[in-house]
Image (cartoon, rainbow, N blue to C red; front, side):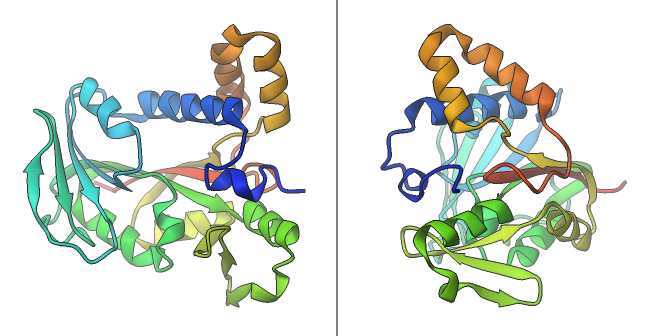
Length: 246
């Protein structure tokens, strides 16, 4: 059974409490992951993520890449004192080894089928010792979408790459934890950890928040304390942290 109905993945459903919980988990994961000292960060979430403002509030300078992997005018403009927006379809506007961290949230590596080229670009622009945080659709989610929508015939598989029809008509690339590790190490980065973004079910989250609206913080702490590493049996997304050697 699909852990979240397909219409919810497009934001047209009614699982508001779960997504409130989900975004709170993301914010806490980012808070603990972000560099301790003010740094230069790149966001590849295409303007869809919430984290650039969170990083700027923490004192980091952020380059937010809009329309990533989509042809667009490469034009840098100021967005705030600590955040800049650039329209580009790759990271070619950045020289080698100039940024401290890269965040690829909002499924950007699943939307971009050739995720390997994106990871190589990420590794290129990172300084030695720099880190990357990436989030992808899980294989569990992909198989569940196929089962829910009866789209087995649309499954496109080349070797170990699994491409799944997305509810909005697009295609998503789904990963196992082992494939995420291969993606990271293939670009020359070292894996720090890979884990499901969330393991608590939407029904449990809805039940707990419904009985006590103040329990969100407790749910987030429970989630982050209970996340198993390299578990391919739960979670709609996998999240990984990697470091550039040096």
